Length: 363
Image 1 (cartoon, rainbow, N blue to C red):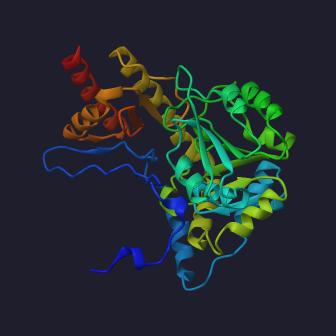
Image 2 (image 1 turned 90 degrees about the vertical axis):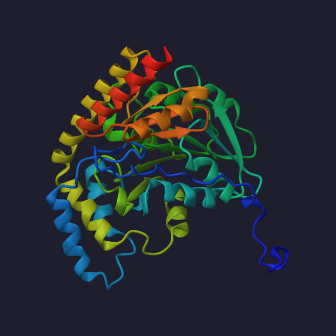
């Protein structure tokens, strides 16, 4: 047997690094439908225009894609009134976060974020060699921005604000985030993760793009994975001022976004109204599910994303198992709670039925 101590030496920063745990798919059953509500995916099939665009682009799969993702950047630039040079594209917004931390952090630098928040944040910070500074959420599973501001030190290089927050759902208000940006030193990068932007209906919610226009140290992350039905194609983009945008492009591997993915994203922008009609259905279903859960006695924080959060504590894993046994896979987080994605109406109906059985059994 090979002695592992004689093998290649890996970075010490990787020791004990948490692993990303994706939502598991639902096991097929012959006697009933099963549903996956564990990954915050759009449950609707992609529109025919998206499929056609991807199929047509696949005819040139033997060629490299456009390194600059120029057509997509141009379309986004026109739509958002942002200079093309302020964009960076990558394989989902999470990949861009990894590259941002590579560009900003030296070993021992600090990354501040709320916790619990997106599971990739501690992984990305540790991969970059940074120290993770996790600031607990407040009552209602919301960001504690004053505490996050107080946690900033001379070693802080990045603070991450996820709004709506994954996995708990609440947004940061615009006034809260504006006040926070005014307090953060200008040499600290503020990353506003807006992966679920299209699901937000709260008029007081933060507008990351407006704050990017006001503060040179604000970077906004967005994605085509959720509302635009392109989770499998991994298309995300960042909006930031120079030199952050340039640093991101330097750190991103060449040809990260394929031509197939770029064309599908362009098609999604072209038929955005139809896609947003689907989002509106999901928003209505989100309200129905959250209200149904509260009526059953569950403590469900306000959510502006495409999921609900159930802070179940020690019952988290048992609840997840009960749901899976009934045909619905949800996403448990240790002994903290379960995140339940909004699915098609039939999936939501079944989940509420299972939640009702649980509530009756544990009353």
